[in-house]
Length: 129
Image (cartoon, rainbow, N blue to C red; front, side):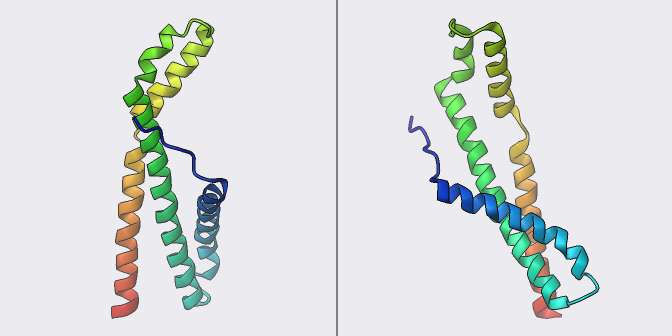
């Protein structure tokens, strides 16, 4: 198995700041609702595209984690780790079990699909109307 490598710090920083900026922009929409229409649309588009980028990245990370745990059988190996305390083993089993069974990926699917639909609807409304 090819173990995924960490992204470089600069790459992680780009995704982190993309998420932060998108979140701030979405919160700023309320201040532009009755003000400048162009600023409102720019803020909305940049925030939505930013969320798509950020959540695609988070989906990729979650998928990589699950793949490593499953392909290496890490969850099944925990009970054999005798140098760990019972609490350590229980904690690792909890982490691996929740990483593998999380519905997190479905959250990412919904965010991505709804963002794409919203972007398409926004473009249609702005360009056609």
